Structure formats: C-alpha cells, structure tokens
Length: 98
Image 1: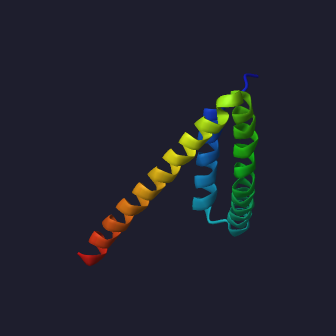
Image 2: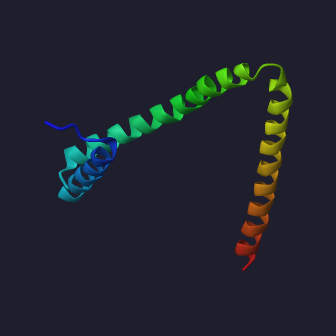
C-alpha cells in the first residue's frame, strides 16, 4: 500500500475534524478539544527551545564575525519591532477615534 504524504494527511485530518465537529457527538468533540489544547500548549512550550537549538549552532559556526553579525541582526530586529509597534499604535488610535 502506498504511503500518504504530509499534505494529504493534513487535508484528511481537517476533513475528519470537521466531520467530528458537525456530528455533534459530545464525547468526540471533547476529546478533540482536549487534544487540541494539550497539543497547543506543548507547541507553545517547545517552539522556543527548537529555535534556540537551531540558531545557537548556526551562530557558533560563524566564527569571529559572529559578534558583528549578531549585533546587526539584533539592531534590525529591535528597530523593526519599534517601527511596527509605532505603526500599530497610530493605526489603532485612528481606528478607535473614528
């Protein structure tokens, strides 16, 4: 039997989830919601660890230029965060006042 790829599995999972939700069978819906909550909390916990696990070796491999490159990256990240926050503030203020 041929193995399903990731995309067909995702589509199949979405369809099964929709069918379970529409069916109205309460215990199945509760199981799905519980799994979703637990899996979501697990992802929120593990993603920062994965980022650190992949970024730290990459920085270590840069060698002597790592400090300068890391400083430029941090400065760009900080600057883009400040700009995005400022734009969000003014857009939010304009929408709220209208």
